[in-house]
Amino acid sequence: MSTNPLAALSDAGVSIWLDDLSRERLNTGNLAGLIADQHVVGVTTNPTIFATALSNGSVYDEQVRELAARGADTDAAVREITTTDVRNACDLFRDLYTATDGVDGRVSIEVDPRLANDTEATVAEALDLAKAVDRPNLLVKIPATVEGLPAITRVLAEGISVNVTLIFSVERYRLVMEAFIAGLEQAKAGGHDLRGIHSVASFFVSRVDTEIDKRLDALGTPEAAALRGKAAIANAVLAYAAYEETFTGERWEALAAEGARAQRPLWASTGVKDPQYSDTRYVDQLVVADTVNTMPEKTLHAVADHGKIEGDKVTGRAAEAQEVFDGLVGVGIDLDDVFVALETEGVDKFEKSWAELLDTVTGQLNQAKG
Image (cartoon, rainbow, N blue to C red):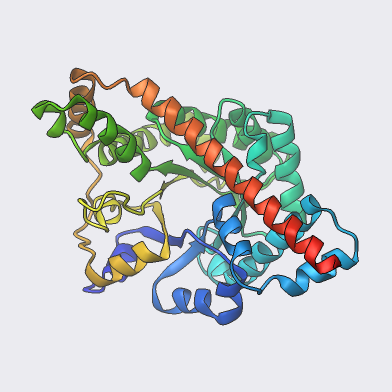
């Protein structure tokens, strides 16, 4: 295995995607450099990323002035600005997309988070985003809320590739995989070529430790303290076991025979929040083939500098992971409540970021209009 940690990660079958996108990255060649030198083969975005990008610097000023001159309202301006960045990123990754037969070279854009609990609106928005970007290597991000699940199926049924986001529990992840398979079955019935439909399932990692560690600390017992920092990795290990279990058997094989690709697990929220932990733990400990790890640039550079990539750390560890979860229940952690809280918080955070994005663009449009 390579001594370069990022190369070793790639060699182990993990696709390295950057969890960030901005016009500055595109214009300065920063993103191209990460592709060339740091083994980055995809990009994910979310409302928080775009809100940050739009509030920093003047790189969007020219487009904002053009939009203001055309009389564009805030929603239309946000749509055009974000889809422009994503379209240009798709073009930058096009050679990688072709070289990997569509597996990598992917760029994600998220539906308006205010629609997370509205199935019909989510479907309409996803179809509109796919049309607006108009690139084969686009992934449209749909949250794994209860209302998002049927939207996932319906969008895939239209032949559109999907990144399912905000997955926290294995139970919900199983429903996501069911929605994916149902979508492919409907796409096949509708005459779509399954070889062109791809999907990843974004399973959030660090936020699980943040929430559960807080509850363990509140308990204040030695038994609780011994479980600190173990939940997120165990949760991901159990998710991978569910992935292995799901993509087998007659139902899946019938789709695979038509060229379908399994929906890869994507480890999201891999930036470490607790300084007590290694800043590369959610990369080092989640190495397993046929997965994606999407990381902020800070984590990417940390892995490049001192990551410990030592081969598969996930396969065959489900029993050990289940022991961690049994221990959490044993000390009084309400896991169902944890996952509800995390999903609610995740949607709320993205809604807040979207509101900040709208406010920023409104101010920029008003300034451009004088």
